[in-house]
Image (cartoon, rainbow over all chains, first blue to last red):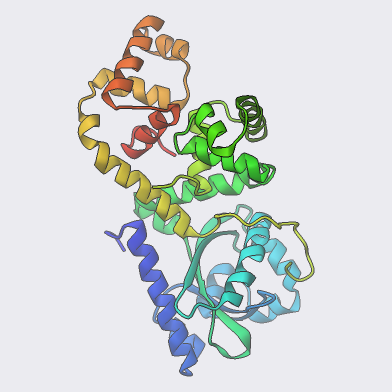
Length: 236
Length: 104
């Protein structure tokens, strides 16, 4: 894992997810399969996202047996997963599963805490729309911090995601128009250019800009660019 | 909706997944490749000043932190702007992020 770029790391875990799911389809036993990769793995229901099966790494690291999780799902969720993760994952994942691209793996960061921990920490998570029986989907999860300690380029990824986590609500408070303008600002367009592109007057653009600054508490260009990179607004 | 809990998230925009960050990081890497030669023309002093500009310090804050006059800072700033062909305030930040002068 030492010399991988972020991209290579992503691709490698996407590959594992695809491969493991295929082997599960062919009937391999979940627990046996999961022994070949020292990661937290679980199977979930693709509609409700409830966890239905966990591997031993899950139980050892996260600290729960499957029976505990199933007996009190909401309790487990609230104890283990950050509310912002619950909200964002809950919104994009069911849609992703429905689309059911056979080879697409979704990678995202979730914030979770192990049993008896106070602090949430980032976990990179990989899942794909499944061909497994009963609408089950495979998740592979590992702690981003553990990897990040050894590799600096994951740190940047973690920082971007932490920023998003902490500024999610603020970003949500923007109107669609404001996001549009924020994106144009981040990509190097000035007020007159934006006014022309969006068929607005300069005053209107200025007002929008003031509102954006207020809602996101922007004091300088750096604050703006942080939002831009964290929320994927900068374009090549 | 997840299990009957509605978090009111009806707007869909490009976020969440890690691929987005990888794209943004790739953007920074490409930016760096393209501007490497321009960046090399900066003096050490200019790099110092670029770091501070990108960090969000005002001209007067920069002048006190380096113990130089505000006019000197303004001059440096204009020279950096010319050398790096900067057309927008945000580009100072992009340069600084791409070349590792500031952390995210």
